[in-house]
Image 1 (cartoon, rainbow, N blue to C red):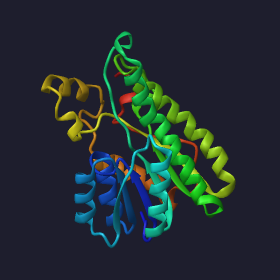
Image 2: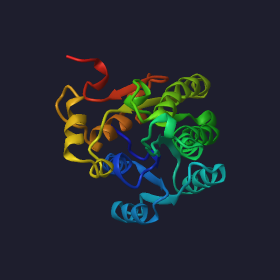
Image 3: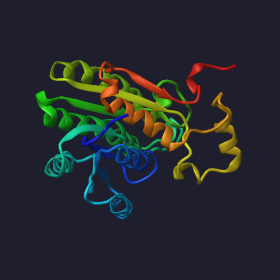
Image 4: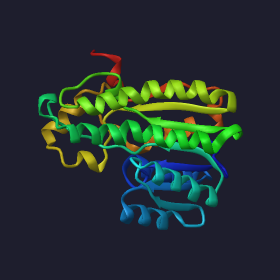
Length: 245
């Protein structure tokens, strides 16, 4: 999968799936801009990967100004050919216990943030074209208790992706999403083993996913090998949404 000399922005790129994607993109010849709120992790990763081909830009996807700054700084470093719209947070609470502030925070990062980044990417790419991959989730396809804001946001990402694909197609901008199942990242390390075992049991393949497996799917959609793919969602879920056996 050739990404040689392609410039790729990865939001939420300092850890987990984002960091795995940054490493894999560099291995495949890309220049990478890591966008994240975590200065320490983002700076460390950029230094590890080599500042000649990687940059870290502190980015708050809830701020239009911050997103615009990201693209200005990225454009000064490389040609922006692809964007992995990966930044997101989770929150668990029964709907009756959700506060307005908790709901709005999840929606603002996981849905509005995807919109802000995609909008700026499409403005920046213009007639030159490019590829945008939005990170949705299996919970955009199915419901789950205590995840009202998250499932609403990820469902929104799926349909937003379809609309952006239609709007971007005349300019050669492809827009797709991918929907990971439960992935073994540091976020899950805080869960009790019983909970991890239950989550594992929901995947017919018998294990949780690896960040590198999601990264590979994202980079495929960003690459020219996916040049006839737009407006679709790629499930990377170990069979989670296939049904019960």
